[in-house]
Image (cartoon, rainbow, N blue to C red; front, side):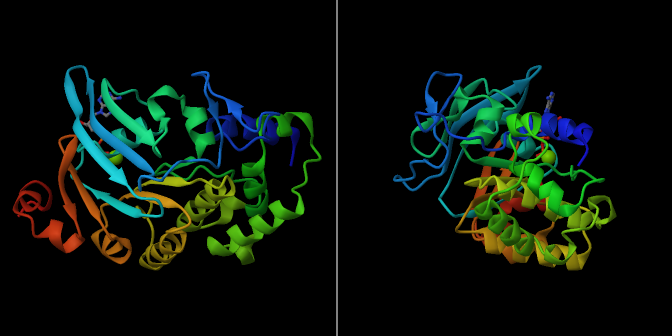
Length: 289
Ligand code: ADP
Ligand code: MG
């Protein structure tokens, strides 16, 4: 890998906030002055994510308007809703990209996400996948995963970064999980759209997130890729908590337990896919029948 690419990687990863070596105290100082310790999210109350009465307006327009929602540890929650319902804005709030005007947003029962910045929230164990894949096209699949392990400091300080054996094992495991074990040496730019999406999910997995937020992950995928992505998500459930925003109802049917329907910045309905699809209010606003 050239120093140039590594620098570029360092800049990109500072936003991703790859894990760094723990400080002497075993954790990292958050801007709020509290210690952010990755690996410790208190879910004793049965919730990994908790939003209550969240509001945000853009120039007077109420994009999020009294949103309350919670997710259990290991749950795979599907979020559906018409365009403009506030699904992406909700993810922006959880990840610290957008500050709400009011409301409560907790990670586990003790971490107030509104007191943390975007990079800290990633370090705390919340990974986010945007719709467009953002892998490094000129690097191999393997190098992309390796890059996801590095901190800004690692990249700057040493061109000779080598993953330790534990990290190598994890890379091999992630390669299998994302169906790319046979493609480790391929340049990422030669992968199909779906494979690039899986690689990006793999890069997130290298950081061992507790909660993964995925915004329209199967958009643009072939039917076969969509089916394999459903398999992939089901295999992640339990070890990770997932929040998946999607429009593809066949995909939702494959992976969902509980589906939350957002509309006008709040929860309109929640239940199994069959329950919400037969809800009159949902039919009216979302299914347009
Ligand atoms: P969804 O992802 O459900 O389609 P979004 O969360 O993207 O919906 O958007 C919700 C509403 O908020 C939309 O009407 C959108 O135009 C508006 N919105 C989102 N972000 C901004 C922003 N930064 N500035 C102004 N309006 C925004
Ligand atoms: Mg959106």
